[in-house]
Image (cartoon, rainbow, N blue to C red; front, top):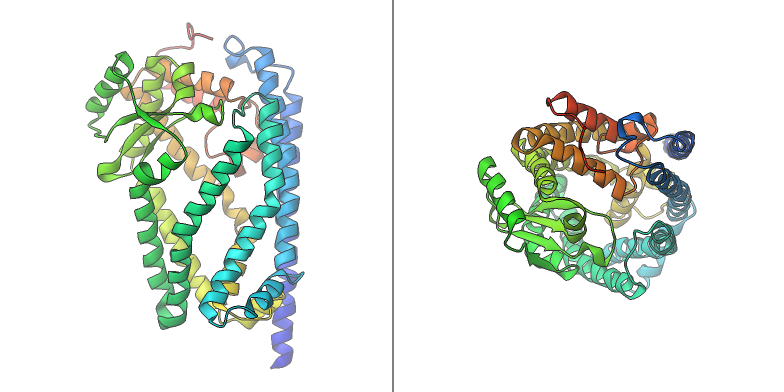
Length: 430
């Protein structure tokens, strides 16, 4: 019996190392493909955009993409080192032994263990995040955040995370310890309720902690948006402008909340760079997501997957080979929960293309809705400006995009929109 246990333990260790090696090599290979492909096409603007985007703008997007891809290689290396440090190198054992000296109750030890892993991971990633924000983003003219604002955001995020996350963590671990064989079902119900609560309170209570939201001033833009919303039969709590420029020059717009808390948020940078009809077209695209119930479908998918994950976790918590195979000596709920979410990305990466394909399908459907309910050429014009102003590459590697891109590339989106309308790109302002 002991021999069988050791065999399974060693087998899982080998499976874990093999999976980690494969996924790491795959991620690095995809990043290198992206770098090589974008650099090869740096010298020429794609013909569909030759009269809309200058060579200098195209090359800036290429250089920005290459810089981000190179940076991702360092982030991959750090993630692998952290994973190995917490598992096979004994990090979780060390943290667990440390807290065993100070916390008698298992529930407190488990919460302290998970919180410690999360804090240590965040601290380890802090130098890379600072470099990304104040070196990479700033060198391309996107970062507008001050160092003081950065650390203020970090402290606020940490406080909000602790206030909301710790009670959830206590609840889940208490359920594991007290609710018997079907704890995973009760924990899932708590998880779903928590996420719905966050969706409800985010617009009014969380988002204002980080940004100012001013009502969209009366005028032609507000009238145009109100008319489009009425045409689409979509009611919102309000139209707001967010001071996104305090952190970045990237532009965006989004819908948030649900039910009576739905609101439209426009970045001030978006209003600055797009014309009224283009903003309406971008919002029509977002309305398309609601019309096709994409938000609900994604929530159902996420909740369904989380139920499966919790059921699998239930099996692993009583499997000694899972803990021993990752060099964790204590079979506790906290250690098992942390291990599961640490190793899950290693085994789930091959499924990433399915998620990306599903997301791109939704984007095409939202584009089609926008082309029907707003001015299609204005949507084309808006997309071109957004790609240009955000320095998004027009020539991504196809395999890299298959894995990672949640949105279709520029050429695919423009071609689809052109195919669905009799209008052409002629006359679209640069």
